[in-house]
Image (cartoon, rainbow, N blue to C red; front, side, top):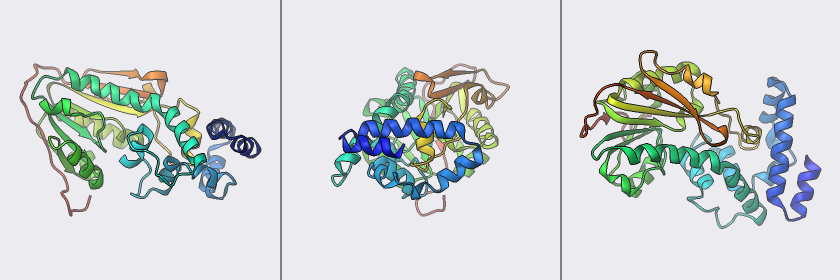
Length: 301
C-alpha cells in the first residue's frame, strides 16, 4: 500500500492515492481479527502514510477531535462541502479531501434528502424535533412554516444553527438525560435522529427509540438513520480518521423499534444507511408545539 499510494501522489493523483489506500485498508481489515485491527488503529499515527492523509482537512479534524468527538458539525460541513478546505491546505490535501467528499456524498446527501422529503410533506405549524441536530443542514428557510426544535449537546453547533436559522428553537442538552427520558416534554409530529445512533450501543439505542416514540403525537412519525456495514471506506474511517461507528444492518435496526407501534426499515442509496420509521397511530393535530428541555448555556451537558 505504501509504495502504491506514494507513487500515485508523486504522479499528481492524490484522489487515486486515497482510493488505493481505502481498498488496501478494507482488505487489511477484512483479513485481520478484531484485536489485530484494533492495534493497527491505535498505532496509526505512527504509520508512514499518516502525515500524508492528515493533509486532508476532514481526515485531520476527525482524528484530532477538537470538540472531543470525531463527527462534529464542523467536520460534517467539510464533508458536505458547505465549508471549503482551509486556505492553507496543500494541493495534495485538497485532492484527497475532494475525493473523500465525493465518496461520502451518496450516504450523506441521502440522509439529507430523506429528512427533507418528510419536512416538505408536513402541514404548516407541525412540530418537529431534530435530535443531535448539529448544524441541521437539511433545514432551510423554506421550513420556517414549521415549529422546529433542535436538540444537541454541542452548544457551538447550536450557535451556528441559531444564527443561520433564527426561527429554529435551539436547546442544548445532555444525551444521557435524553436517553433517560428527562429531556423532552410535549408531543411532536415528526422526530428524527439522522446520526446519533451511529454512536449508541444497542441498549442505549433501544431505550432512546422508546423515549422518542413516546414523544410522538397521534399521527406522528419517528425517523432514525444508522450507517450499515456497507462501504470500503469503513476501514479508512476507523484508522486514519479515528472515527469508528456503531454500524447496524437493517435487521439490527428493526430490533430497536417499540413492539407496540407500527414500524418499518428501509435502505438508503447504495445501502450505506438504514432508516427506521416508527408511526404513532391517530389523527394528526396540525398546530401542536412540543418542547425539549435540557442543559442551557453555562450548564454541564
